[in-house]
Length: 117
Length: 113
Image (cartoon, rainbow over all chains, first blue to last red; front, side, top):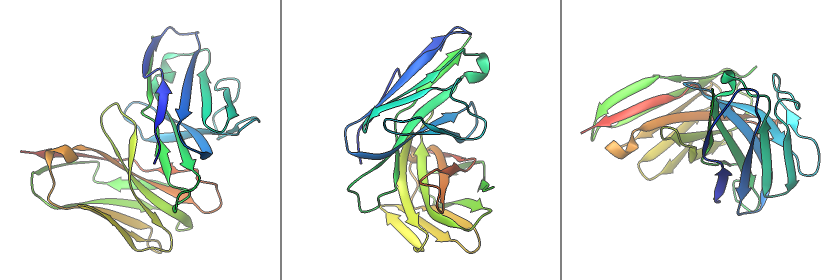
């Protein structure tokens, strides 16, 4: 597997502000994703982070609200913009790794718990 | 649109029991299915991945089976322990969608002493 770290691990923010979450991986990554887990819910895919180009967003998620960067293979950021209390969730990055026998097994970071007041 | 359901939503068992968690999906055209464990407020730990061509996978006390034609997977936990207490999630990787997982609703397991 791999060591996947996220920063910050948690934060409490005021509505109308923005928060940038970082995801760093210590192994060779093929694909990188961002998910949201709202309280009491399962995970929903926000977008696929593409290296050096615009992310691919799922239905219901837009770049203006969730801008994503991936400047290299092992690092990505997700920004939650103009936050409202409805954005309170756990945000998780996940990756698939190169060089594994099961190449599309997905591994998750520890998550960032965001509370918006 | 793929929908993934897990039954039961919550389960409490005494230590030592064998138990089965169920996962069903509506579209049988899947590439693989992955079982995860999530501790409260934490990220996900991958437990087992079953490719669509496989029937089952085993890791220690865990055994996952897959019946793609009927849209079902089960996770069998043998000799449960209090440390197994967590939420268990299944996720399907639909064919041709580049690893974009669709998650189930989860089963919250509590193993009591």
